[in-house]
Length: 544
Image (cartoon, rainbow, N blue to C red; front, side):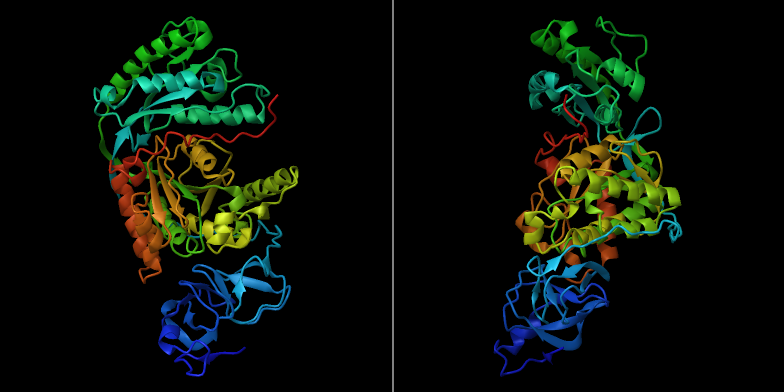
């Protein structure tokens, strides 16, 4: 290994020892053979090797950069032979496809993923429960014991054929008209592209049913109106029989005896488009009247169910924003609440970490079964899971899916994995859980919201502008440049970790900010009015 003195060398090509001393790398684990550049590094520049436990201090050695290395990208700090492991986070992220010199840029030109699923479920080490935390927020108490963080009314289409009518009804309830119901956060519309041409009772049908019923009964939804065409598969009868939805109105349009159900109207029964819009207008006013009577009241933080999501990730995400969200997730679990991580395709390569923390062999096996299903599912279409990361991820310094997953799983914190859920399945267990979902953010979050999550913690390194009515989305920037550049879209700056703040400090800040948001403080996406078009149910199966 060739090093140059850490105080610089006048004969070195860079010719500026002061500039060399200021250049920064971050080493995430003592076993790593790559460091992360925190600024643009140029060929010939000397860079101090930091100590993993204290990035502000160095080992006393300096490497010479061989190629241009953008911020967030990896630099070899030792020679790496061809076919040898490349290590980051103290974990293997892939293998070198050619010899790599000290100071070389390590990316997709010399690094490839070769992850294999090989995990034993009977050698687990679930952690002890965290010390309990007492915390409160101001929420909306609903029948059945759930507590909401928002007070929305929903317009939900049972089939794509009624989507246009739903939007036509929504257009009638503009800000001026909604001022009549000041205690309602708004009306959101949930329309989609399916609901028919699918096997009755099949997987696709069941998945959509779970999403629709999950949104209709969500604790952030004080009431909703469902509109269907009438001949689709997801009829009111199906939702009542298989997803415990209770309609207030029968097929003839008359109100049934129960008053705690969901109004459902059918275009074919009402007499078509115009008649349905008029009927929906009158019914929605009644729903809004009931919702406007709701008021916030003190609630225990055990009623918070937090969706953990990352989108537009970069190399900073795995050592700033995601670990900080993990620290916040641990706090929610310590309060008796739940934290839900998903994006199964972005757990591939890091599944062993969650298996090790699973509370039982059955939970561990359920997670591995989901990962294996995804490998087979993607292969059916000629793809591979390691086709991920995206173009934007790679531009931000992430090379392999294993590297991306190891950073993504940091959002899960350090507590025991309690359960593994199907997509949009109701979350009924406190603590950390995994929900099966694709890596596409809108579909992933839609599933977790349908499962009952009433807050979303969303980390981003490239800059996502995501919102999701009826649930507030707290966006956490992985780096300070992003936070200041897109200030109107970012709620919390986890980039402060790169500037010397601890993960625990930023995690506590996220936790406290989340309690404020749960109590009514608006997030950036809410201030901007984002969240009307992010309802994207994921369904698996043929269109018939």
